[in-house]
Length: 376
Image 1: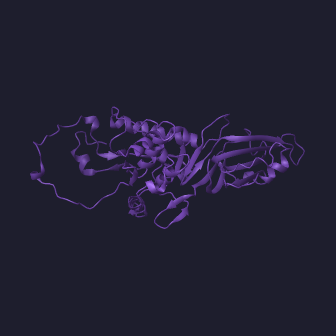
Image 2 (image 1 turned 90 degrees about the vertical axis):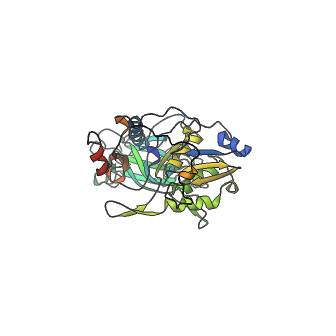
Image 3 (image 1 turned 180 degrees about the vertical axis):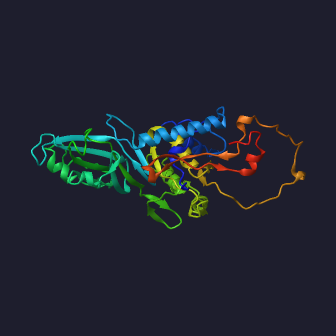
């Protein structure tokens, strides 16, 4: 299983959406108080915790549902903006449809569609999928044309659409700051027996992410850097870089980039984030997902953001019985349904057409042997 932690695999844990404007974190920053968003610690508005088995089921169901809808293109009069981070297969809102007579004289033989894949500039748009086939499939030879636009702030209108849509798409339709694909299909019964298929693209997301370790601005799937990018973004918390503790951010980014060995004998970075975020989720929900992508925490204290990634740390002190302030309390045995001797996971697998896939169960043989049932 890849080291990448899909953003969409994270389940919100008792976090309410922020209000408009500065929101909760903005208010705390202004007040100079301490505030923590953590994937494993205290929630902002604590709620009753679900049983672990229930949480796992919810996480798997959320991943399956989101992964399915993420790759779908759709028609909707009003929809939220989509953020793309890392590398992922995505669909998006269809903002233009048109048909025209094709080169064989067939009325409505040409089908045109424009799909917005990200509400910001992206590094690249790779292969486009038409249903379950890639655009270069031999069955589509001579039938498919795809124009890609990366969302440059000064990008011009798609020249082919302007020339071929009888004034429906004009030079004023520039899509500035919006990454999109313009697709033309020559519809035939053999290639498209059910009509125009679903359209999705492999997108390498936001490429305006600052890495303070090098000073470079570009694409990154490092969760710590992506979180800092969102905190300072106009559609995020709108914080200044002066409000982010840079040494802490650099340490978190380094933890994310640590090379880890796998059971298969390969090596990969400790944490990456590859997925989509909807601005309709709310600022705190988005922040929590980015934090969870690195098993970390975001601390806001004294008007500054401290970004932490989960990882081992060197001990700074040794605690002994002399440090106890009271009697030791021993917790009794947990209920059998709360006992675990292994881990199961679901992740998005690129080689399986970016669909949710079960990871091999990770079992601890010594715990299995000690389990009352001897089972996982």
